[in-house]
Image 1 (cartoon, one colour):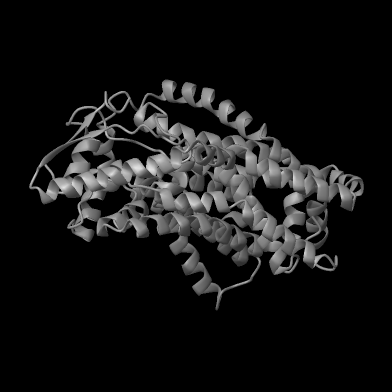
Image 2: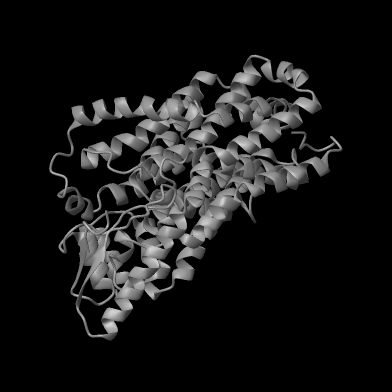
Length: 472
């Protein structure tokens, strides 16, 4: 993986970029088969933007950033093309945001192409491991609430790293203000990211020497983090949303279920074979980072146990809030956030293991150029045919994705025909094609489920009923 400056292997870096960019193609193609459903139709096109923002905060939740993104959903302008392009832009934003934090961390260690290759590879790992790919990328409410929040968090983290290094944008004050704005936006996406930010800011601040705690930039950042988190946590609307879950706020149940779920996802992710191949190939990268990057030298000197605990901390703060608020882990959107940060913390954990035990140098000697090339090819192939990428390929091969698209388009045609004929109530079959890589929710049997009602209201109908028998 010789992607570093002075190696004379720029051509190999470009080849890596092309190779791993190809792995993003299945995810990109899938964007153009995405269809809105459920929460996408919660708001009608004529909803007053700022009035709705106020109503959401007062009566539903405190997610000010996520609520904003919900109301710029392209489907509110009946734009299916815009809906799909939004998914594609989010997909592209993942490597862009990772590129920013990598560039902020590495300084001048890597070529720009090396940073790009590193960013794309990390993106593919994250996309491959996401517990709920459909809700992570292709369903606007879920994608914008969680994965977009992760991307903004990368920009904020990169800005803080640059601040600590004295690498300011324009000047110190301007850089700090931009960082605070990004912190505010990042916290406003969802409760799990808010919890993670509180955990990380407090952990970093308390780890400082006593004489530095109130002089460091981490003190005002911690206070601002607490302030912005309070805006979300104490939002009046949270009470309204939680009223739908009467068994919530059970501490013992929440802790017990969280303790059961944490090992499930931890071992699911670390047992992913491509992750270990990538971990092996990271050894020479880790060695050069330790030698040439002050940031990674300091990172490598930290006790690996710290990062190991952070891996579990990421899981705890992305699982516990769901059980505390709703008493269930009914969807895995929150675990998408955990997965995003888990991969990055895993990288830091492995780097510290390599650095503290002098393993990077030993592994680099064992990894001769031919072996590196072979492992890189094996990694690319395994990433293509496993995880979420493999699921996408299977869904295309089985015809489920094209079948899903065809069924959804038939529904829209049925609605248009009914409206032209003056009908106010129509019946639809439940979906027969439900691709695991794309399907989120469907209308429910009968006429009175909230998904059916919102679907009907959006398109100006009184009722949309579902014939469950015909859909079997």
